[in-house]
Length: 233
Image (cartoon, rainbow, N blue to C red; front, side, top):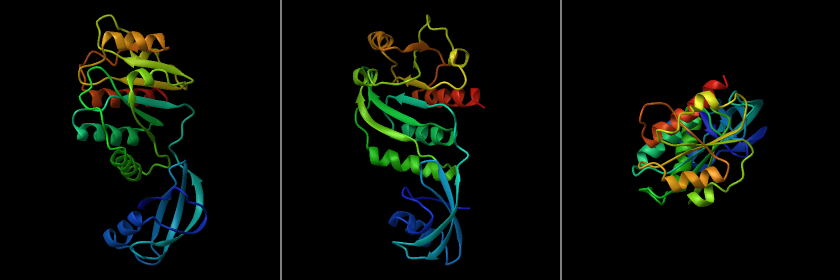
């Protein structure tokens, strides 16, 4: 069943946003009586039926509210330095949403090659991935901040920084404990500077390794998300 995003979803008749209405009526050519599924992005899914196939304000009737399957008893956050290629960052956001993540922080650091992002575009990528993977929860993307500000943001849980260094031998897969909250920092193409790692450590972060393979930024971030979710299966 086709999934649509309606943040204010509740039982009863409602109107789909214009973009969702257009997709429903113009693209999918749905008609009166057709069934669809609605996600509010906050953990709930609804079965619905199309009442009025208007291309700008389609009217639907929501029923059978239920909790989505994508819930977990811990919090997972990834902080990532945007890659030079927007496509690579968007690929990470798509895959992380499919695998399962709560929040994504964007930051700039010493070796960053990209210091600005179009947040609205990134949010659309995440919404699309949520719909494609039939998720009930929409990950939150935080706008870009400096590394110095990022490491001082409060977080109740394990705080890790992935760093490629011969002295860093503790694997994320070995040190993370199932069920615990986790925030992981992933550096830019040139990795973190030693000064940045020292600053992170002073703010409660533990340097960890994601394995012996040398990974690109977006790949490392996906590996981190998958590792935490796999341990929690």
